[in-house]
Length: 210
Image (cartoon, rainbow, N blue to C red; front, side, top):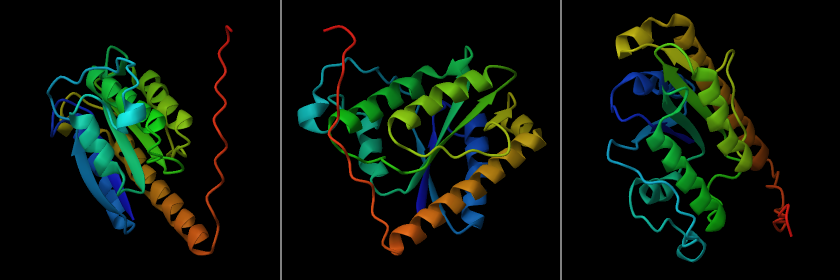
């Protein structure tokens, strides 16, 4: 089983990386393999609602989004890490996730359904809970079980060294890794025993104004 750790910060080895790496170590200790996917520090445009993904089965803009969509097929769970910018998720990771999940949903890829996910956020001081709420909304819409820890999945620090000094935050990351590993193993045992994925109903799309 494999979990992909998504680094949504423009800094490759910064605070967000430090936090998700602690989750990764905990997953590894529980015999779950991990890899890191960095979204990079080049501009990532937002979704323009062109609906090209319906026929192309990928995003019309060929960048990190399509690279991730191709990579994600081989993973069983996901950790999405983001810095806090202006009490919200960073602009790059927001545009990235808007397009990733929209392309998957409208393109009929079905990459993420019932694969567990968790958001990890880091801030110097504040805005963590608002950011955590924001990111969890993606998983709720995509039918991804949300994995929690013994506290909200956040760390605090302005530098990686400061993040490592957040002892409670680091513990929260480790517990998160253990909880995700447990969920993945339970899911595997159930499916190995013959439990089938639930049947998908045809989507009912209702506008409020007709």
